[in-house]
Image (cartoon, rainbow, N blue to C red; front, side, top):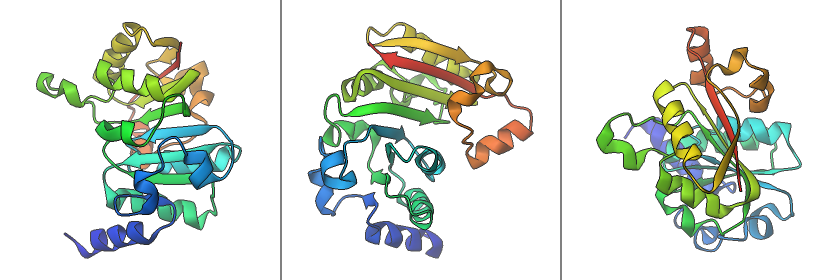
Length: 219
């Protein structure tokens, strides 16, 4: 492991806005995010597979009246988001270091108002469907944590994942697709992503790739 990664892991271990194994809130935060961490009753928004936390931090700046959680298993990536949130003085942003398959250990039914999934690995091989974060099993779990009418939004550069996700959402009894586009930057839906771009998204757009977007609600 490189020295840079080691320093990132150390930062996460010491950062107050990172919840990970070994810290007191890790086993007691379920159903109590507003009570134990944010200390308010504001809406709670979760970004899954948040990577470096660019979207979590970006939305946290735009919507100070909401609480944001970035969830990812990679501690070195989370550390970057944690640092960015700290340097920006964001008290409405937290990071959870855990695998998404263990979400039920950290979120209670009807606890979340929105879930965002931004450029996840499309897992294109058939044998990797269980890992796709919009497969029916994952979607059913997200629906438990979301309040009725809660948003589930996907943004991706992958045509494969976009079309697959449209299918799984349309076939789900839990969701209703409100809007979608296969070319966000040339669509009336552009404002729906609130102008927040990840580093790699900016590169994709500059190279001419189209960005896809799906907005759905839990029924």
